[in-house]
Image: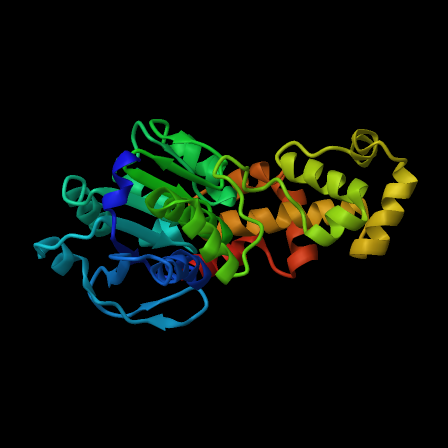
Length: 324
């Protein structure tokens, strides 16, 4: 993205149930950078479809500067328009949203999507021929639905005049990278230090290739086992296979899980799969049978039993609540 030095004004289109953390992790680095820049820096604005406040996934109401229609009619277009979407993003990516985004293709220099915002851009065919990412939980669905997008599991992607990232902390990684491109590595480091953010990762780092630092440091073999589980959701490994690939006895691995996580290997694995299923049920249009298969269940009956045992309700309950 060679012309990124000309980028100054970031405009965020907030869709309902967007992530507060993702938004502020994108804006705060720009604000911090301004304090280190000698000369013009960044500015930002918020817009919604109708100019009214938008309620985030946390229930906070965010006031905006204008409607998207007013922004389109304005002579002073932003340099970057970023779509902010998170929960129930498919439902909120309405035909009206898509039509408005298509109007901006040749009016805004750079288009972006954070968290699940990439979905709206892809639906508007604005990511065709581009490399892009989305929140890891939605990646399989995204890549299957949009074959003309080069979908990847990177933390963030800058591909010419399209920028995308996978979620809250990846938005911070993305903005630090952009600041480095705009004003140099020294400014980006200063921003990182000011925000006490000392774990910056490159864009090519996979989103879902880590476990909590405490587990990684104290019990590496447990961390290896969890990574194996996360990589093998749709076709689950047996407990014996996990132990074998972790290079530890099954008995020792069971002790590790009980001691650190208070759960058995199988119990933790089941919860991991059901939590993925819950996200798919509430945030995608996949039917319940498809969700069961994606979560590693060969029959809907066994899926229903595990779901009720772990969450205390049925898959149908969560699907109904997400569409009400």
